[in-house]
Length: 271
Image 1 (cartoon, rainbow, N blue to C red):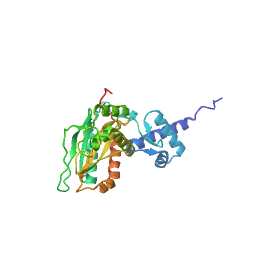
Image 2: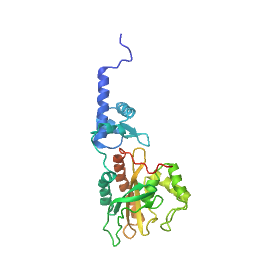
Image 3: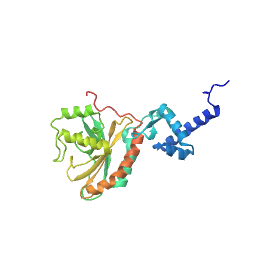
Image 4: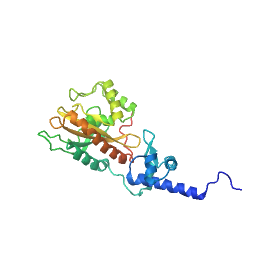
């Protein structure tokens, strides 16, 4: 007599095929999908799609996004890569997306990485719009509370790391009259950055410049760095900048779907 819990081999095979098909969808598109998306793409029931997704999450090949209703590739996908494949550097990973942001905005785009309690710019594309050129100044150390690029990095550190930064740098240095130097106001801004996914420039590093910065994150939401888009106020008003942000953030989200596969280096470990 056959046990009631024994599965039909054809059912097992069909489930396995669905799991592989679902994984293939994610690998081909490197995007996020929900149950309904997978159901439509593969012409299977939502129940079958959910079971396949659940299996892939349990095995680490997929993870749920923050909403819990959509799925993205997980770390175990790296096991399928060639073991001799070298992790690309962050500059190489970001360059294509920086070019996209430059094409969309026509503004200067720069890549910053954290170094200790500061950031430095390591790459950039300069704009030629207007009489004033927003230059990419490489290699200059900028404290983590100054500029949108700094705050895009600072906001995705652990709370205790941020507290340590503030305590060790009291009083916070002002680069312009708009630099955030009050710890409470800085924490308010950090919460805004975490909620929105970008840091606005307040002419806090340089006067006469509007800017926005997007964090570049790993799967644990730790910062690799930030990409900043800036332009002179005579070229890009605050209102025009706000209209650009959704397009720029979409590109930043695409970048983060790639950088999430690579662990961010520790910024400082003595906290």
